Length: 142
Image (cartoon, rainbow, N blue to C red; front, side, top):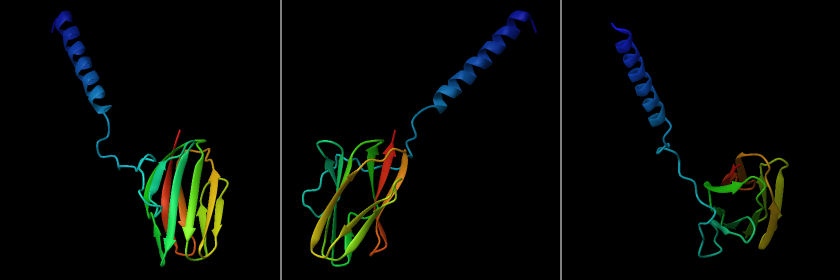
C-alpha cells in the first residue's frame, strides 16, 4: 500500500465514523410525551390547566372518592411559580413531594390554594393522602 492510499483509507474511515456520530445525535422519537402546562381545561373539574399569568396553574377536583386529574405529567421550569388549587367534597391532604415539602389541607365542601416554586430539576409527585393516589407528576426542567 502506498502512503497516499494509506492516508486516503484513514481519511475515509474517519469521515465514516464522523457521519455515524452525527446520525447518533438525533432526537429521541421514542421519548414519553409530557402534558404541556398550556393545556387548558374547559371546566374547573381540573386537568393540568393553562399557564397562569406567572407560572403554572394545576386545578384539582376531588368528588365522590375520585380525583381529577390523576397520573398526568405537567412541565414546570426550575423556579417557576406553581399554583395548585383544590376543590373537594371530603377532607383531604394534598402533598407535594418537593424540597421543602408542600402540604395543602382541604376541608369537606371547601377549597384551598397554594403557590410555591421548585428549585431542583426532576419529577415531583403531587398526591392525595386520603385517596392514596398520585394526582400529577410535576416534571421540573432547568
